[in-house]
Length: 191
Image (cartoon, rainbow, N blue to C red; front, side):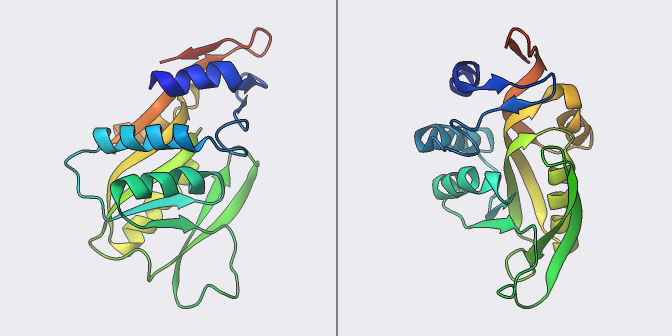
């Protein structure tokens, strides 16, 4: 998606060969018009697939997933990274290692929000090693839900999480795939 790639080049900051900072428009300050264009592109890419719900993980994926849910006209559910007193009933739980935060999170989704036979689209802002998506896939498997596709805003192609998911047969549609980044020049090469 050229619009997103251009925005990454303009407002993104290459912090290292593996860290891209896009907090000016994606995961701290949010450009809702850009999110709408991204959601419309996912709607085009996943046309013809039954989508009953969108599932993401807190926190950075929520904004993008909410806009996508509006475009797809379905509810959005987000996996929580901590148990709370307001989370009643039984839950699906998995563990996810975060590349960004460098730690492992217990991720929780209430069983009343993802059910057997539901067709789910997974959405997130970034993909590095694919750990978050693997965790959400595990939640869907435990629920008996069908993963119809995975929509990622920015995939770090050099970290191979996306390649692994595609090899396993998942319909993964990343809107921008970064092949390499040079922190000295700020150059970003897209697939």
